[in-house]
Image (cartoon, rainbow, N blue to C red; front, side, top):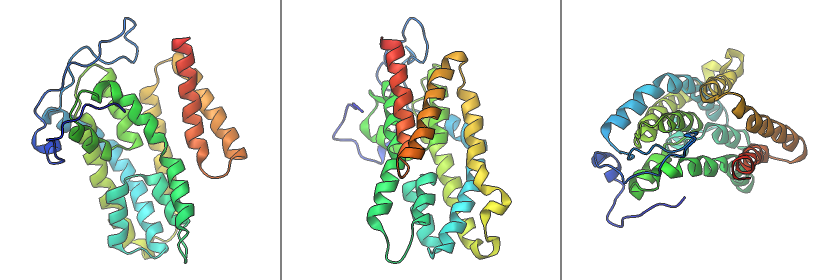
Length: 266
């Protein structure tokens, strides 16, 4: 991601100085489809608040998945503090679940790192999608916001920015909501681990899938969305069968992105 940097910026400016406006963002294309708004992108408390409130229902659903992670973390021997620390610093449910599933004695560090890397490579694509709006914001604000980025609040942020609102701080606000519910629910799950037992018997394993279905419905733009979605589905299914590990997640996303590039630049 190409970001204008300012050496004087520190991490504390992400929250303490969110009122400054960003530079003029890229102009919208004539078609107006998925193009950045001509309005200058801002980074203000209004965006943080809007993102936080908008994401609360989604964060509540993700909290159920966090309970499932906390239970699994407890079952492999992680303490409440260790499970909470992982959720607070990683904030990636799928990779955290896989990590604790691979947990063993001795710890297979290489296997965990490679698997988590493969799963989380999709964030490079998600970050690139935000680049047109974020490239003129201070690096401390961009990277501070990206720390809180997850699949769910990224989808909400893309919807917000493509609508032309220009709220660059929306990702940060929605991410804070996600972070609070994710860490809090992890603690609840870890504390209740012995009592809950197998979290799948309560349907916690389906919560994340349900959240993604709801987000996909929000991002549906008509028949134009059908081609990349079908390509991603087909490539992911084939890759899951032929390629070991979780690389099918990245390969499906790359295939869909390539199709869109060919369609619009060809």
